[in-house]
Structures are given as structure tokens and as C-alpha cells.
Image (tube, one colour):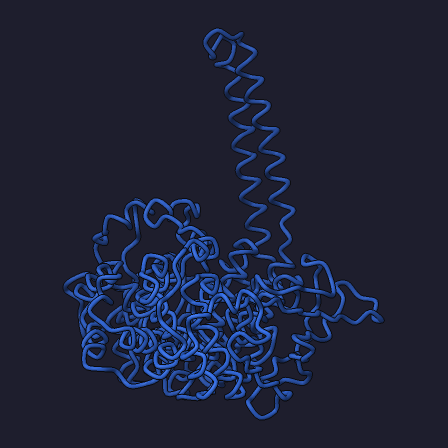
Length: 624
């Protein structure tokens, strides 16, 4: 057992959690308190949570006890009743003030106004409060709860632990609680009522289920997401030491949610897994630090600030699309040079690249400094081939690696327009090779935490030749990707088909076609391959569905012509509607790119662009 003597800073904690969450052996468990909070937040924030949870794939779990307690609150109308109670309390206090203040309002309280003006203001304020209260009471709890329940149902643990533990729970819990053994020992004070038990051992049931499930999946790390901040879960720590940017976002932060040392020790001896606790506040911090602006609304709600607070620390960058069109000079790299860049990107690290990558193995303070200084100057000592090699390997780590690596890769991609054309082309080559290839072969679909930005940078003049050669190579290797970039930014048609015969609201989603290929399949029993999992809900708008599908398959959403309904039209998504995975061998034949001899039948712009590159074109035709 380890007792903490030096409190961890919020900055170091978020880095550590980001690293752990990105490991395939980490499993995440949600308790009832967090699920209730998730039901209360706004639709956009909740949708962003589902999208974030989907990045953890099949490593998110809802223990039976969490679902049981949520169901009790759901059927008992707890959240709705709590909101109504708060509104009634507010209005009662306002009416009491209205009655009491009449004694003082028999005189002019507003300078220069009559005594009646003040009382009129009080009466108007009370009427406004009534309207605000009525709007709050009209909250559509059922719709919010149904989306959370659908998400929970796809992640429910299937363990017998709760039922196996109940018989001995009273004796076991009583002994543990007399010795302040977590979790839940503060609940020993709870009293049963004539109509209902006190649930004093609920935390213990939840914990035993988490331990047993973690053991069954051979978890190396367990993250429990909970809003329970009591010391029978958390380590008693001092006020956090805040960096300047943390103070600018929020003046006061709760201590870092380190687990009670006995709790962490029990998990370690039972499963050999490390334990981390995460509440909504530090989940918000994690998303602010590593996932903004993608999950900005969720981060703001979790931290309890407006999204504009983040701009005080990290001003939102200009959209990539507009920045990508500003470059006036194209790369001096010929097509043959670009071919060599693609080859170099695929190789193992050179000595200088290996030295750079090793910097990511440093501890938090040194690693933070390295990422802060990462920029154009970092790449200048490298040759173009080494730059492509470095960014490919860095992006590979970012696809399934730690939060700091994601931050570093995102930072390099974000400064593409600050790089000279040749450096930008080489850096972009590495990113695209990592996104479109896996183990030297075309991936089933491009994957990247920055997929939309990668597509947006296509408009940069420095990328045209990179994309031309990359597109030809992917075609010739029969890439199964539904979208293969070629530098021309051609638009795609995406057709959303619904069942026009069934009379239901919203209408039933039947199929989605991309380039005349059906991408949805019926009868998919694996939750991680179901469209509902990707959406986090059973109903969604055409816009939400097509955006989710475009992220999954690596399609540039800005280049999609979406047909089959208005983007804001809702659709019902069948439970077993899945996403088809394409391979190099089951796709429709892909026509070979036509070889155009220099100066013959080429479009005028192509002739002009390549008129001094006959040797490079000849190499291109021979190579491909």
C-alpha cells in the first residue's frame, strides 16, 4: 500500500489519466451519480460524451449495481422531482421576499424614482422567475433519460457478483465499515425506513462488481467515473497547486481525485491493476487539455464554465480550411521526390528520428517542456525524408497512444501553414501515410484523431503533388477506403435512404450509400460495430448520422453532397443496424488511373503545373 505525501498537480494528473485511458488494457466503469449527471446535461454535451466514450470502444462498462440504482431513480422520478422541488423553493423564497419588502418599499428606494417603482421591479422579477421556473419544469426528462439508458444497455456488465455477494453482504460490510475500509464506510450512518432499505452497502456492491469484472477482462488499469467526492472513496488531499492557465479558466478547483490508498491496494492485490478515479470536473479538464475543440461543450459543462473561458487560455485557431488556402508557393519537390517521401515514411526510424521519439518517454515536467517547444525549429535539422518518417511514427503513436503524443501530433499538424512548402509537404506525407496505411498495407479505412483537419489541409498548395502520388499508390494497391485523396478535392454523393412505407415518427433509417456502395448491414450483434454505438443514441438527425458515418469511414464531410432528406430531419436507427467493413478483396474493381503522356490530352492546368517535370512524370508512370 502506498500513502501519498506529495499532492499531484492537476496538470500532471490529466496527463497521467490521458495516458492510461489510451491503453487497450484500461477499462472504465461508470457509477450512478455520474449517469444521473449525464442525464441532466444539455443535448449537445451529452452527444459529445457519447462520441468521446466511443473512442474507448469496448472498454466502457456499466456495472449492474449502477443500472439497478439508476432504474430505481428513473422509476421513482428522482431527477424530475428534484428539479421541481428546487424551482418551488426558489419561487417560495422570492414570494417571501416580495411580501417582506413591502414594509421597506413605502419610500423611494431607487434614487430619483417613486416608492412604487421598487415594488413594481420586485413584482416583475417574480413574474420572470415564474416563467423561468415553468420552463425548467417543462424539461423533457423522458427524452434525455432514454438516450442515456440506450447507451447504458449496450455496455451493461454481465456478472453474477451482486447476487453472489448479497447473502454475506451485511456481515462483510459491517466489519469493513467498523475499520473505515473503503468504499462506502461513511454510509454506515444511513438508517432503514419502514418502507425502504437504506442502501448502506451499495458502494461496496458496486466495488466488488468492478473488481470481479476487471479480473475477468484482465485489466491493467481501472478508471471509475464517479461524482462521489466523500473520503470513503477519495484520498484526503490538500488544495491543488494550479498552473496559471488553470486559474484563468476556473479560479477554484477541487483537489485531484486520487483514490483512498486502501481502495487502490485492494484492487492491486485482487487484479494487479492500478486504480484511477475520475469525476466530471477532471473529465472536463482532460477534454479541455487534449480534445478541444471537438468536445468543447462537454468540457465547459463539466468544468461549469462557458466555452468562451477556454479562449482566455487557448484562443481558438482560425479554421484550417481558410488557412490551408493562403499559401502561394508550391513545393519544389518533384513527383519522384514525393514517391521517395512515401517510402521513407513507411520505414523504421532513422537515428535522429529515434532520438526525437525518445523524448516522449520523459516524465511529465520535461515532456511538457518538450511539447511546448515543439515547432518548425524541431523539424529544421531533419531532411524531408526524415520529417515524413517522424510524423508518420508520431501519428502512429497518436492513433493508439498517450494524450501527450496526441497533443504533440496535433500541434505539428496545426502549424502546417507556418512551415516552408517542402517541410509542410514532408510532414503531411507522414500524417497521411499513417492514416491510410497499417503495417505497410492499405488500411480498411483511414483512421486519425485529426481526420477532418487532414482533409482540410488538402487545399494547401504544398500538398497537391503529395496527394497526386499518394492517390495513385492507394488506387494501385486497391485501397478499400471509400475516399482516396488525389489533390482535386472532388465531391462525393452520400444518399440516406429511409423506409417510406412505414408510418412512424421519426422515420426508419434503412441504408446509406457512398459512391453507390451500401455501407450499412442488418443483424449486427457486436455492439461496437453498430451505428447506435457510434451515435450514442437510437435517434439522430440526418446531419448527426452522416457526420458520424463520415468520421468512421474517413470521408471529408465538407465535400459531401447529402441526399435523402433535410439535414435536420430525425431518423430512427434500428438496434442491429451495423457498419460494413470493406477490404481490398471484396470491393468493386477500381479503374486504373490513366497514364497521360506529357503534353497529351492533359487538362490545361495539369499541363501548366507539370510542364517542367517530364522526368518526374516518367518516373511516376514507370513506378506505378
